Image 1 (cartoon, rainbow, N blue to C red):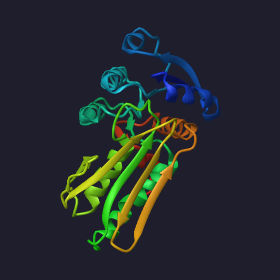
Image 2: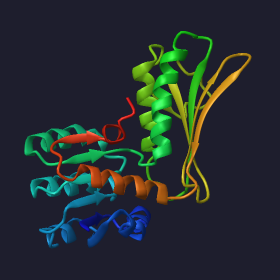
Image 3: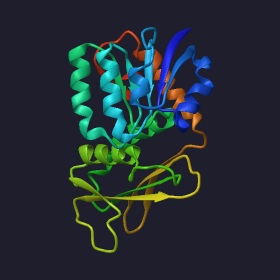
Length: 241
């Protein structure tokens, strides 16, 4: 059984712990903050799962990579520094994998989203928007998943050059993709990509019913990452392309 450290004992951290044995992992470290990370005994850890907070993620990941510990991270809201971490992982030859969403179903949705954007680019009468819904305790708006959807649509659809959060009542620019974020109740996550013309609508929708789907995906990614060197994405693990 592989040895696992969980960095960040919030909802995701506890969800990961609850099913870790079913994925052949023994949790030997539960890290709540950076001080507990640097003072912990991590010498026997085979991999770390990092689901902390936006202000702590970079330091947590960097420390693990410096110690040669492979890291799978799903913390959102800090990714302006993701290129630095990817470069350091490649330089240090230590495995690192980041994803904004570890649901297998959401990864399939990402794949379909890229394909749909490329197809519908030829039909400018269809205008796109993204709508996401999460529980009231989610810190970032829009979600990291919604950002990924938007960025991949921009990359694959020539009409869109940027995205805007909740553009309000003003008219949105032709080349801007509107993203609406809603926070309500205890919703685990709903993401909708809609293309609408004057006469019809196409919708790509994913809803998460249980947080365990994210925990399971992260644990499967960690098993795959052990022994690998450098920076990876969840797409590398799933190998859809």
